[in-house]
Image (cartoon, rainbow, N blue to C red; front, side, top):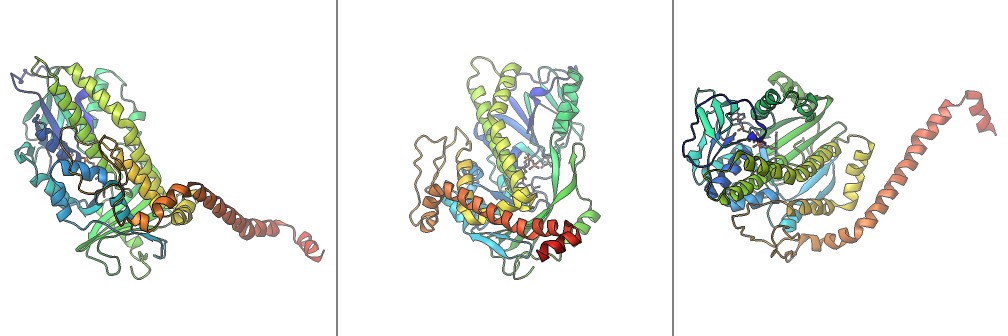
Length: 482
Ligand SMILES: Cc1cc2nc3c(=O)[nH]c(=O)nc-3n(C[C@H](O)[C@H](O)[C@H](O)COP(=O)(O)OP(=O)(O)OC[C@H]3O[C@@H](n4cnc5c(N)ncnc54)[C@H](O)[C@@H]3O)c2cc1C
């Protein structure tokens, strides 16, 4: 998400179109972040427009999975019911080796429901975006077929120029136009015109692409369940499969031979995608037949959108006699926003990157953790980590939440929320809750034991034979004859 705050291009000399209009926000992009922001701004009664270059719910995109941090926001916006009705909450998580054999299978997503009180759901991305569009309290705010090609700061207004020759005017422009953001590029350019070398190449290339994914939707596959997730782990690549009664979503992640950075988009062309698909078509995904790994990107986009809307609303509510906030107060508000979001965003990015590397056994330690330590300590440990992460998520400050289920983790921003284990809790039934509390030292011990066994095996099978082979033949013979 990028903002007009850093725009400081010289004035275009455009006439001041603003007149006496109210404070107005321009959102570029009607993807996950843009739609959630527009819902929240509408509820906050703040004037805005969403400019989308294509259609709101395009054909591409496979699935989207929703954790409790996103579900709570969607419930506040009145979209959760429709999303829940459109899919089956996930239940089991199977972790499989390269031959498709499962080495860890637990009702992980039932545990997650107990952690934060919201079910973990997966649905077709297109269906998800369509629901956000249909449930919008004022869908007229979303304009399709409006591509932003230029952004200018006149000093008093922000102007967005569109490819159809029209211009939109506002006080703030928010780029929700995805990972390859045009708005971000225009801001970089404008910032460097105003202050040469302000945005360095180092900053522009700081976002690295290390993995590439092939995604798709297929018909249901026999033996894969109707609402489960499967991680199939390999060296250097992994499969992620999500099932629903009528479709199977799949992701194949590869480690790139070398990292790529802006301006490269590391996208497949059609022929490359065909070759990549053919190269894995023979690999088993279960023992019977046949990264976006952590699925947090859209959740973070939603979190950022609602934190920003909370701050915009606060700023507008405290306007006093002015009709619109000054440029300085907008800048201060954005700096505050950035400071507040930075750590959490980095935490999510680090966790996602780590899981992708675990799935692809990126090094001996990651293989050890994925193949042995996680199955040993149990998926409940991961459920606790994610339960804690979700419980620290932000929500829309000016809309209520209807907490339907009990949750093991207290929502940190709810002073009156009382954490409680649901009756017949899976965590209790499995003895996991207690176990994982006291298991901390035990898991460290297990880890040590595994390391010891591994290194002993390694020495016995690889190091000792290598030393023996490396010894001169007669020395070896002598050694044996002694
Ligand atoms: C295959 C895949 C699966 C994923 N699965 C999950 C998941 O399960 N859970 C999860 O949390 N995250 C997931 N993510 C990550 C998530 O999709 C992104 O983090 C999220 O979509 C980012 O939201 P956004 O609003 O910033 O951008 P996007 O959702 O990408 O939306 C950007 C929008 O901007 C529009 N646009 C672009 N340029 C312009 C322009 N110049 N003018 C006007 N409009 C423009 C685009 O058409 C698009 O509609 C997944 C990502 C991928 C690639």
